[in-house]
Structures are given as C-alpha cells and as structure tokens.
Image (tube, rainbow, N blue to C red; front, side, top):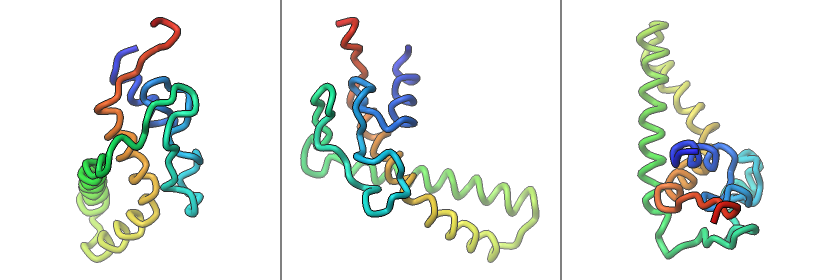
Length: 126
C-alpha cells in the first residue's frame, strides 16, 4: 500500500496515521457537537503522540482554509455556472453548507496535517 493510500485510509476512517488501528478523535461521528473536537492525546494502540507540541495544529488552519476555498469554488461552479443561480442564492447556500460541514472540515484538516508528518508503519512487518 502506498503512502497516499494509507494516508487516505487514516483520514477517511479517523485512524492513527502510524498504526491505522487506534482512533485519532475520541468519537467517530463529527456531528456529536459536544465532542467533535476531542482528540485522543495518544494512540490507544501504538502510543503515537497526537499532541506533538504547542501550536502543532496551527498549520491545519491553513489546510482547512484551502478545503473551504476548493469547496466554495466547486459550489459556485455548480450553482452559478451550471444552473444559473444568482449571487445571493449562492452566498446563502454556501454559508449554510459551510456551517453544516464545519465539524467535518475541522477533523479532515487535522487528520490531513498529521498525515503529512507521520508515516504509516506496519508493526507486523517490522
């Protein structure tokens, strides 16, 4: 399995980027709003440190921004170019969708960020 495939698995399944067994966030459902931002401090399986240093996830903010821009451009192209909606309808729809998708973007950006720096190690092969 290539690194891209293993990173995509980790991001999609909320798994530790090192072992792909332990959960990164405490709850798998991002829409349990009281817990959507609660991360495990360490992987319960391989003990990988998820809180690496103060400010480590500052970079995830830029990843989240990039996800939002790509999402906004996609919604704009679908609504305004393909279906000829007006700008006000686009802005209202985009704002509603962005609010609804915020927990998902938050988690995805953090998982993307840590997967840039932590590589998968198959403990069965090492």
